[in-house]
Image 1 (spheres, helix red, strand yellow):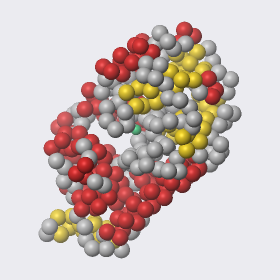
Image 2 (spheres, helix red, strand yellow; image 1 turned 30 degrees about the vertical axis):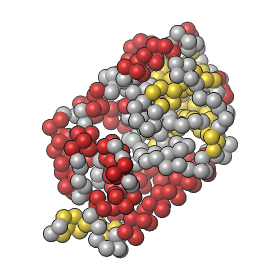
Image 3 (tube, protein in one colour; image 1 turned 60 degrees about the vertical axis):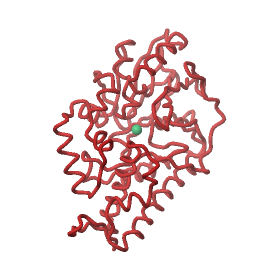
Length: 343
Ligand SMILES: [Zn+2]
């Protein structure tokens, strides 16, 4: 959810103009593609590879993004060839144009097995199945969804903003992706999306972080019908621990916002933000609380659009689920419905 963070340090790189690209250390080309909503852009990266390039992430499938790619393609030095398309995770702003680009450039799409399975599941979900799943989920967690929020949770939107399912080659944790004169190491992370891949270039101290670490907002960490028995916040915090092992001088290339230095400080700020939110929930639940009261205590629901109201709700659920597994809060059924209680 959006949260300004004064500790985030922006790199001095100048963002590319629409329809153009900017060159970064290591010869990496920075491209920004439009997405609807407050995020406005996703960054995708064209990275020098043996005999050509590899692309990391692809943009959401919209007419605007298709037009942006058609404007960019003649300007990009792609004569040597696009060797592979790496997609960090299955969310539509990352995966949306994968099939379209794969077909145009005859390049394989590479994702982790979990990310590939998540995209396949999202594309094949039936409306009937998702209605049953979301209704039961709402009941079990005591959430109240208005009609626009329900429509988003019930799915169907994903298919409209993704260009289809490409042939997917498997990206493995601990594997390597060949750059022009160095290897990129693949790490796999959880909490934001299943099997989220990051790429680290040890020689250049460069991390392509996708949505796992962002400079200006915290990555959305949500409980959904698909992961309601898991602990996505616990998984996300563990992922931050593993990324904290990278060198302090790492330059992070995130999917949203500018490249930034100061990875360790950013990770500390993210940990502190989640810790504060957890403590606030525990304090609020000293008296039994309905779920939506807890959400409203953390987020300005009245000022948010339906997507962000849904994300505020599912993100609060991820925090409640984490606290429940830690034994810090518990669910109780009462005549008035489900309540959360600390202790
Ligand atoms: Zn994402």
